[in-house]
Image: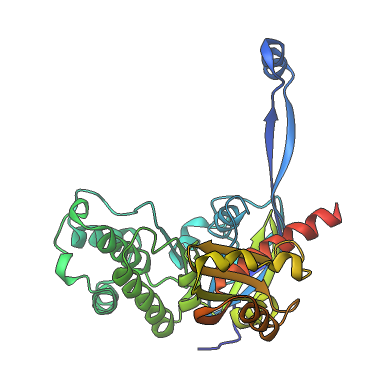
Length: 346
């Protein structure tokens, strides 16, 4: 596999929607009916990125950031207002019949399976739709059975499957025709810890063994940590970060968590971090629950050594430890900084 081959190319992608604006009251209703006014909403505003063949990237952002709109343009459901996106050299909105044979799509909350058919029959229907030769179909099913462990429920009607079984079945359905690119939207949503782990291992193995390029959209940040080396993050329709997860940690991971238990819960009043140190807004948070205390702080402002010395000089503690910021905290800070940058530019 050529690790430098570009599979997905997105260049200055924009999508605008017209939204009807209605004034209040009966008069506003009549005006909207005969002389409607519209506002233009920029759902996606000039996003560019490339994805190499076989790469798994996390495509993340808060609700309303424009993630779904980008995915719909990449899958050919929506046409961009401006810009170009290509997958395997093809433009998604052109020659749709050939294009859809090269992509697979899984939506965590919606299924592409036939509810009343046995799973095996569902796959046979998909075989005919995608015009998969018999030999290729048998080889593909053998691989998917091995990776996703479908054998135990492949003869069961889809309606009888558990959520975890249905998700594995949906992933198999999206991969039956051996697509070049797989779009996964919340693939582990609602699943228990063991099933999530199995799904993640299957996705990793499929990418490694088939060279499938994977675009993963998720709010489960553990998916990102375990599957993706690289993330593309968008907010308010704009790209705010594109790089490796290690770079994100290095750049925004200066937050630390100091957790300890007080010998005397009443001593908590002696801890006045906000008065004794000059933290900027968002750089300090203190949680107190009885004798248990958690302090999150920006170690670029006050070093870990100084925070430990200050705490131990003020109170007696039973136990104390320091943790690095988790990925959720890092991403929260990046969203905040991205929002501040947008406000400063307006």
